[in-house]
Length: 310
Image (cartoon, rainbow, N blue to C red; front, side):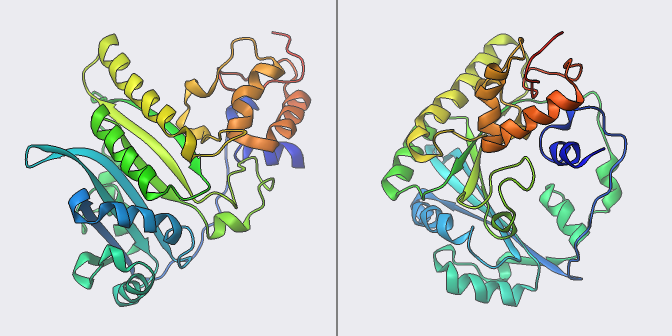
């Protein structure tokens, strides 16, 4: 298919370029046993200090450890507050993990009783909120008549948010009441891949990605307006703490607020294209122009060709 097209479809939104019929995935080895844990803390339990420290530890810790953090507004003892949850996967045993975190992240207070050792496939089910020991075939179960509504937005953090900034964030989240955050740490192998090796550019220099998350069950325009407005307000509040010029975003959350088009002009595409792809947008436009100059494969956030004739 040519080197440029192969580059483009691996992270550039393949739907802009055609239909992928088959692909190969290169697997990586994992140990026979891995370790997982989930630890919750509230604001009265040192949550601010833990969050502040997590920003510097999670992206720089051992390559075998991934630590995600959930930040959620909750009601506890009839009072509104914020709860953080650190969820982790370690490619090793629990004794090694406890030693590592007691050295690098004592604020978390992790102990062996917080940890569970499991096979890697069991850890996949655990991450999907199934009990350890659940048979993998349950992942094939689908309720086609069940649906949730959701809104997702994203940001990238390149400088740790100071404690005062976190404290102001807690207040804003409690005020809004519904929107949660997911902090996904980067670093490690993410840093070792060059930003232009694939279209996905968010590599070295990014500490973590924020997912803004709200879900609801009731249909109707009023619910959509309420929940999406809350998400936009929290996203706007975070402006001082996240990446700039461009304010980067994660393509797979498909956030139309980042920008959209129905003209598929180069300039329209640049608005969202630079947020999703940073400096790789120009090369993606070049590939698009070469392989789909009439813009047959398009959506509201697709890569446009240099000139569009629809």
